[in-house]
Amino acid sequence: MSIPVKEAGLWKCPYCDFKAYSKAVVEHHILEQHKEKLKERKRKERKRKREEREEVDYVMDLDHKRVKIILHDGREFTGKLHSKARYNIKLETDDGKLYVINKAYVVMYIPE
Image (cartoon, rainbow, N blue to C red):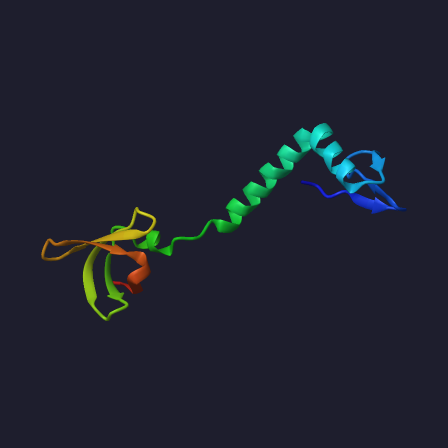
């Protein structure tokens, strides 16, 4: 919600000329009289937060390519990478085995 502004001892609505001695009265006024502006502001805030959260998945650049993967415990796997899922990758090794690996356990991807 928008915060009322205090001017010369009175609380003022940031959207119009409404003023009152009580901050709570102005907050109530904003909730009742400026619902659309509040909804628009919330939409913009949600969009901004969503944009901040979006991460670049560099593993997607390696999709369907041969890679060597090193896990946090030192194990190494080599094969064709499939990385459509957000948290897991599939690795198809040369001997036909299919591994599903959580991306959090991968230390390094080395393209071959």
